[in-house]
Length: 162
Image (cartoon, rainbow, N blue to C red):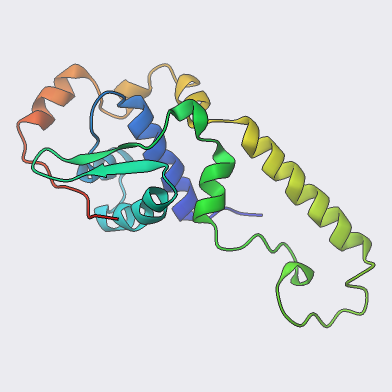
């Protein structure tokens, strides 16, 4: 199983907001930190906002912040919101399956068990765990006090309403 870029950057966006706790994060800053387009991050922002994982603040000094504590956002929460399908094989998909073994296949059972184990592990890790695992994350993301002063002088670009 391979997670999409959307999930990867959704986790990164949440990590950025967690590391920037107490401050609003702006999409251009996050995009610059990760070397990704602002448009792509705005696209990711929509499902995260709808799920309550982030909040947007409008206005001149607007931005985004976590919708709940980083300790309460599991990796599974993010994956569930950003991935379209968890079909590991044809027999997981909705609709007509042409395999005569679909209801009694050992592969189907093994894959379902593996997928549930994957979800269980993702549930064990929070965004906070990922941030705390990198003591230098603020430096690596450009979130030092010096960087904040420089950013404060630039006009903010508010996130679109969800």
